[in-house]
Length: 90
Image (tube, rainbow, N blue to C red):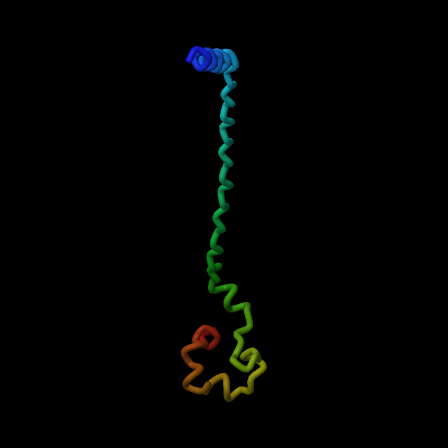
C-alpha cells in the first residue's frame, strides 16, 4: 500500500514538474479577393445625316446603289424598300 502511494506521488510530481508547452495556433492570413473589372459596353456610334450621305448604301447583293442598274434605283423589289429608304432619300 505504501509503495502504491509513493508511486502515485512520484507520478504526480513528475506531471507537475514537466509541463507541456502549449503550441500557439498561427492565425491564417485571409487572402484578399481580386476585384473583377467590369467591362464597359461599347455604345453604338450615332451616324449623322452628313456621314450617311457620304457612305455608299449597300444593297443585299453587296453592290452600292450607284453600281446597280438605273431601273433598280427607282423600282426596287418591295421587300427591299424598307431597308433602303436612307439610300433612296439622298
